[in-house]
Image (cartoon, rainbow, N blue to C red; front, side, top):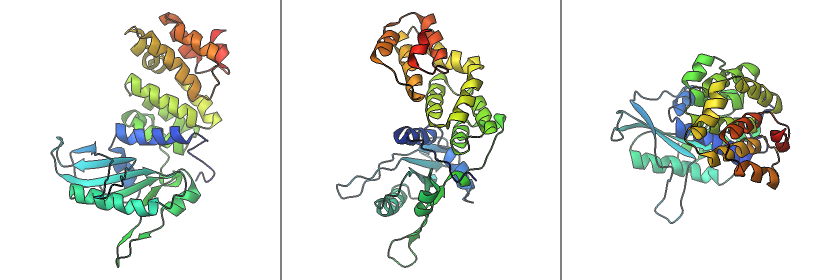
Length: 294
């Protein structure tokens, strides 16, 4: 148990974006988390995203963080066998006690299938609040959210499993930033397409505690497929110097390194692909933005 652990690290918007993107990129991740609560997803052929907008007949709009639907056929016309409303909850928000039942009821009415509410919660205290049953007034009509805090997510440090399921590897590393889990994540990142690998790596580096961040940086620095291919080949081979320069700056920003206007201008004005490649590799290790040019 990591009772003092926080997924946030004072980067709320990045944390929220990262966790939501895992389900957007791999909807089947919802089934793996539900299994930890003993919820068996019915036999299905496909897991896909559904519109997260859950409007009522009134003008008020409700929007979940993500909605995953399991269907009995590969095509989108397959019948829905289970839907999951995924919410990322960082703090106590009394409004959710009213909106969460609405999410479940509206989605059930739309898809004509069972619906589960899955809440990812970084904070143990907030998780306890989220897990409290919500009585709707009608006898026996009670919604009890399934809350995934770090305790509910198992420690899996198998590199092969991480390679097969990189989204789960990202989630596990954020929940349990221990050495073996971080090492498995480094392997998992190699399975991703370059653009997704860049996004996940930037986000994870910004969210991990210092020791785990440093360990991941050291691991990735020795893996050419991640830092040469994923970070630079997609830009260099296509001659997209401007995007490569932006990637350099994004890595620095994700690592919470201050970037002055002069550094930003110098990086963005560079059109030398080899130089940009070198700066991109250095951006993973430097202590200050100015160190790029040493």
